[in-house]
Image 1 (tube, helix red, strand yellow):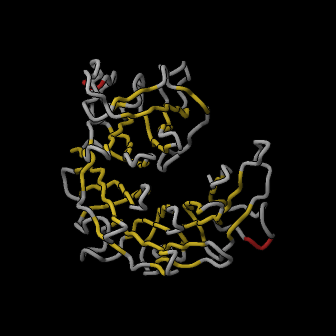
Image 2: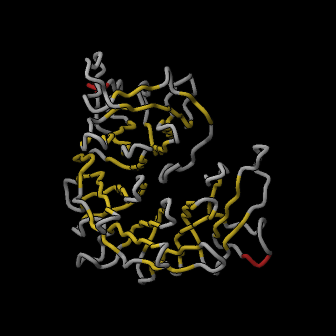
Image 3: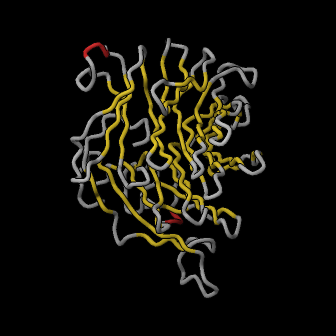
Length: 354
């Protein structure tokens, strides 16, 4: 959404229907916006290249659109491209597999991009890591590529990024070990704009043979950080009513107290697997979470996959008692009376963020 409140969507498509006839059958990046009459029948824009363009991510500075995507030049060479004007700009071209880029822009017009790459940074080419690059609007220059993940012989994938009010970058990703038993982690790291320095890695969640996956992150107007993910750990103490299924979990960082809170169970009432959460916050400090779930127990929605949504407001506790709410002393979580099913769709494949 841009600063005028106009909602954009972007996707990859192998069609030539929306562009010139010579677009071919390769994947290209498309995007369109929601018109004032709440219809999607506005112009469909596209970025046409000679090779496959996939996994686009979009952000705005005011109403100025910024897009990054993954360009597949060969089966082993995937590069990250950025476009603001007429011509795409390569952010990385290293003959390796760079994928899943994410972009964020701050109020000064600076651009932050993260992605996954299996470049030989740690000495082992089978080691995907998370990388970051920063565009300084005032100097019109891109920074060097920075290694975000530790560079150890783990697989680091699926990065997400958001910014706080000072333009600091907050990044999370999913990481797992190659050796048995396999350990899975959701890890976090931040970049300080003023000092141009990185924080230490922080483990948000970990599991031995219980996969934690599909993280997402959002920062609210008060610089509190929200991280959501799905995992198959049993959370009976938090109200999980089905052992062995996947649940949506959230952890919140209290900016004022400078500490992370306890895990919070979001998919309460689901007795099936809850997958692929996404989160964002609005100008009032309210957070919004959506995810895929096939639980019949939620609104009698049937055995198919549906999209569910909750909204909540997190506020620091006052000096009085916590009224027995079992969410620790960092935040009180206020959830809508029930989970609202907002869209019903058939999910053919749930291996990416919805």
